[in-house]
Image (cartoon, rainbow, N blue to C red; front, side, top):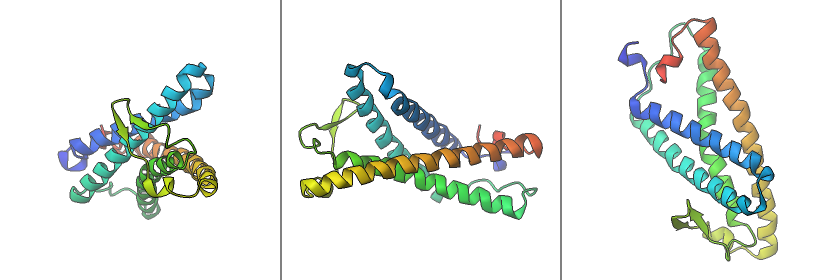
Amino acid sequence: MPVKNRYTRPAILLHWLIAALMAVNIALILSVDHFPDDWVRPAVDTHKSIGITVLGLAILRILWRWTHRPPPLPASYRPWERVASHAVHIALYGVMILLPLSGWMHDSAWKDAATHPMQFFGLVQWPRIGWIMDIEPTTRERLHDAFGALHVWIGYVLYALFALHVLGALKHQFLDHEPELQRMV
């Protein structure tokens, strides 16, 4: 495939690294109820650390995309497919930012946040969001619940967008016979 039709290597690396980290994070948090009790806190802390990592990588990816134009969509795409592709990509970028942010906000509103520091992969203390921690405890508890619900709902949006993204790529690759997957591998 000609180089002009492929994403740049940094874009490809960021795409697959973020996708892998998000998949690990989803698997981790969905399976945490099946872990022995003494594994739950480390699993949740790892989930938080991976989320913060995804947030940083997503910001880096957005900056990269802003400064490095992606390859054009194939000419065979119909107008509605172009619009759908752009809409899903924009929404995925939004989710890559909002999902970790809502989790960080949820964690910062936790009633025991002040006495249980958040550790980034057990290496360094990660700051919580100060203005949330400074809110009166009753209000902060309500925010904790609201941010938790928001985090879960954004997760559901991620599942739907992921499905659309993968199905669209597979459709173009196998039904339309476009070298779609080669653009990102």
